[in-house]
Length: 609
Image (cartoon, rainbow, N blue to C red; front, side):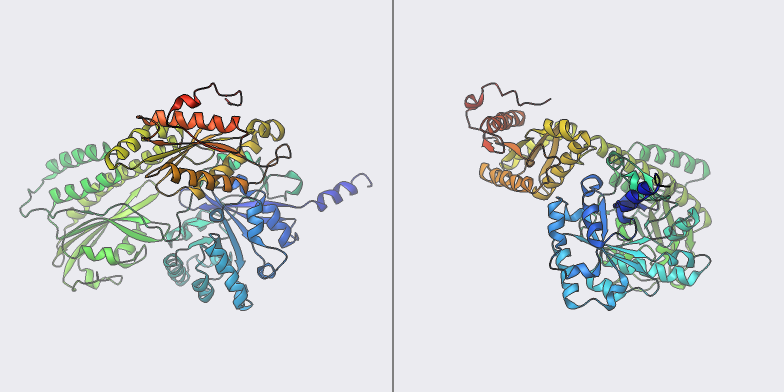
């Protein structure tokens, strides 16, 4: 007995955190990780402090941390200072509050939460029971995440009223820029039921069990993983609040009257040719444009729209429009549940509507009058991914035949397949050009993009600033604390870079612990300001080991075309300046002279492989 009891006491005394993955119900990509106390009675302050130590491993996924109501007004515990101490990017940290806090939330607490949001932190509301959404709290806070109570999932089984209420809640939260997360996803059927009403993210044993990095604090249902596990996971990086899809809307001309009718054999050849053309194209915009053109060659229509499903905001985004009145879609916020289009999209099957005005889900485009019209709605589905929907209208009642529906559905099928392949191709290309550890561009991207940046600079006359940054004494980090700590430093530096550079600039992991920052439309003075801002951001990073006091870097600055007629020459100038900064004592910024002979000495042995 005496041999067992002390061990148990020691284990019980240990505290830690489990991370519950929040997962996309459709493609199973991690959105973030919710911090859970281990053991369950850990104090809220300890939970926050312990969870933030893991943020260096979980980014760029969102870390969701409970924020107890007592800490909102606590003067001796500043959650902002805690986040800064652990060098956590506010855009990768969400504070979770319980929905019942609404009854106790005074003006001070609400103001504090709004201040956190204004500082760039994300907010989440937990324990929401639909249909009685805590609308006042959600409307006041505009949270980025709304976690449903687990009881909501059990109500959807054969309960159409509950499904309708939840679908309305999805639209309400999406219009405020938030995302609903379902708890209690314990089976494939539950996940499918949630996805069918528009809930995109979920938590539960069917998706993943909680993860711990210390076996000593694990509960029976927890999975023990190394910290490197998080670096290997594919995660969804959230767009900033208020961002919209930037893809242009293609306006396509209507087909001319008298298009040649296609018999079965001609249509078969037409479809084969269309499929071959679409599959050979890797640009999603061009694929949709080709599809609209082919429909015009196949049949006469009065209006056409191809919509993309924007699952993040739970709405349709018009991508191709044709015909009078369709421009009204530009002014509309069309939910994935709205109108005949939303009804057909949710149904997932091609649909022929003989009279749009008589359909129970019918709605009208703003600025247009109700006229007798017929509609074909073709959901564009590739595998298990619902990408969007194709709508084709003709004036008059029952103006489409079943053959029209079948042919449109076949063309829609090959269009969706090509569209899905193009998206996959784009994702693979993005991964090939992105550094897996830091999420920054890699050297391959720079080799492709560098000539374009130089050509644009020559066209516009605007300079291009080049910063080459090398971490000081980085080998000591790996030697003293291990490569996992070194990887954490590199990820933290990458987050600091993303905070400093503008949207029009580029950050590249140039190799090892070297980073290349490309500043468009820049001067030497502007590049220096960015370098100084980088130094300030680096000073806030937490040292991973006592072997070094803090994380520092030496930065070389050069500008195209002042420091070279080729961009590679400018990078070489910045490289020499960076090693001059190292020779001068490190943690410095050096500007390359116009004459490179001043920096032509051999670099010191500090150059790391």
